[in-house]
Length: 348
Image 1 (cartoon, helix red, strand yellow):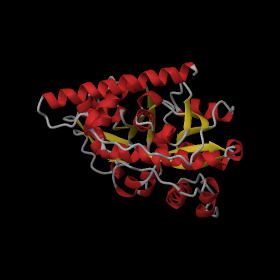
Image 2 (cartoon, helix red, strand yellow):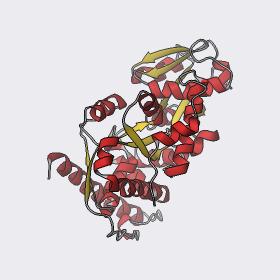
Image 3 (cartoon, rainbow, N blue to C red):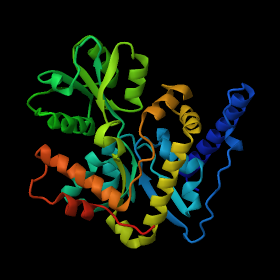
């Protein structure tokens, strides 16, 4: 067992212990919560899947709820999967670099990061959605900004290298008739500068994604509010983060797609049904919020978004249509045909 696997196993054991203690605490306090160890969770007796190994570059894996569940609840193991998570992958740039240099067999990226690379010829196929994007645009309550169109000619701040956040809200702005390149003044800042800049009216809106944005919103909810995001409208049921696999790896391991997709889908379903337990799991790693705050965030986010097959390629086609709105894809490109080429069909 390598060092990374040992570290993951130790972390999982620690999380299980924490859950057991937390469950005991809730019971002892009379809060009505069911102990984690008393929850009946039937393990899948899936004997038809042979043991297989895969390396995944998963950004910020240590605080990812779905990955935590897949490991802690043994969903990967139940499908015969030996999953090695690359250490120290903190952003999409590092994940892409690892993927392009064959340091991993698969990676998790926003579809807004996937599409430019796939359109440029990257040899990969998209397998399964991981979650929604959980994007949020926050404004000050004093600003009198009530609609996205009110942001015309104003400043919107992002964290540095926040391409997907900017791209997501550029699509929303374009839908409202604004040109995101001409009508918006984009400002890049360090993350700790965003809230002070918003409250001082140095900028009129800030954008980002959870858990960072939920932490800001929770701590300053009397002064700011969410004007727009991915929790409503057509985006509310659409995946943003996608697990994609290297084509050469797929050719050598064609049988890995089904168990990998199904283990992800079961993890996503389990999280939806066990938000309380998920919040306790994450509180062990997320130092900015306690389990109660995390639970509130999870309840505010859209759950169980893990599309495959037709549902996945239909969503990818929608993203390609939106890239056309921004002039990033030729209008004569077939969104449906291109999406089918990018997505991997599997038999379940």
